[in-house]
Image 1: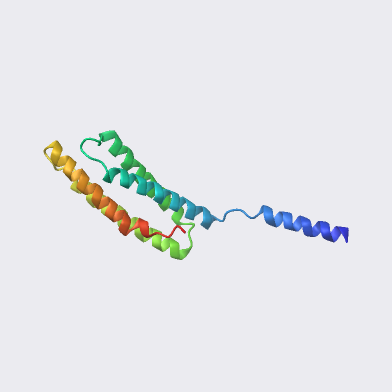
Image 2: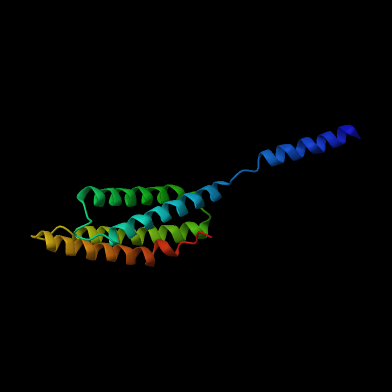
Length: 139
């Protein structure tokens, strides 16, 4: 009888030791964390003005967005099929719009024109985020 109880307890301990986060759960957390950080950086860019913008600040935000997109892509392989499809589509659409916005910047000849372009681009980026990655379910 003691042996049976000990065996059951040992089995329960082994089973509970194996209960960690699944790859899907970890991937979901990675996607949602990166998405949240990406949103923060998009919001920072869209709130910039000529007085508050700096080249280094803009580069930092853009680099952070790029890194967040990489984290999202890296996690996609471990998501379940439905979530993976949703994340892939949102990421592709956001990247496409980001690329298009980036190409539209830089043709200005004056500082005020460049600032206007940057503000417009940042607003487009924020709208793109809302249309794509903001729709990814993180609940």
